[in-house]
Length: 255
Image (cartoon, rainbow, N blue to C red):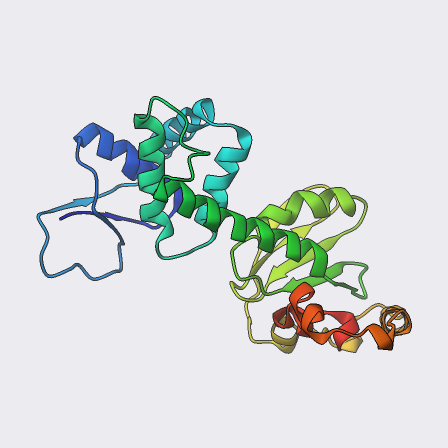
């Protein structure tokens, strides 16, 4: 068994692939630097992340693949699934080694697994765009909090930047404890010192920190949500399928 140990970053993964081609040995297992080594293995190689190597691999992938196919690789990585790094290592190796495109060959188990994982992440991104609810703070900043299954917050930035180009906003991932702040010009990644403060756990900002009209707008939205409901056509099962319960604590109309 050949083991590659790396820093568990996307750049680190691309560097590992570059080094594998240089060494002409490919890993049977990828491990994070903090993970314990198995009892038995034949060879251990420690990858030193190199931006230049990673960029060369990524540019080579971009030359061989469509934008949609390269996006799929990114989506698969952002799934944070335990099997994703090794899966992507095999997938990218097959892309480089094959004379024909494998990206639509769903008889290939690696292609199928990457595609299925990527679609799950893409679906989660779409749900974030649907279910993100913003609260206007006293300083005029709009604050939105969500708890996605996958690390998709970065995939929503362009949408919110285009949609709310003239407003200041924060979008925050309560599961991973980081977010993005848009000041009307650029987007910056942010993190809060106390991730256990109520607003970052429940999604409900203290009324003293809200804009004075925010509570009114929340009430109006709730009234509208309930008034358009046709009780004779209630279907709780479909409702929970279309609007998963895990998002409810962050939805204005559900609180």
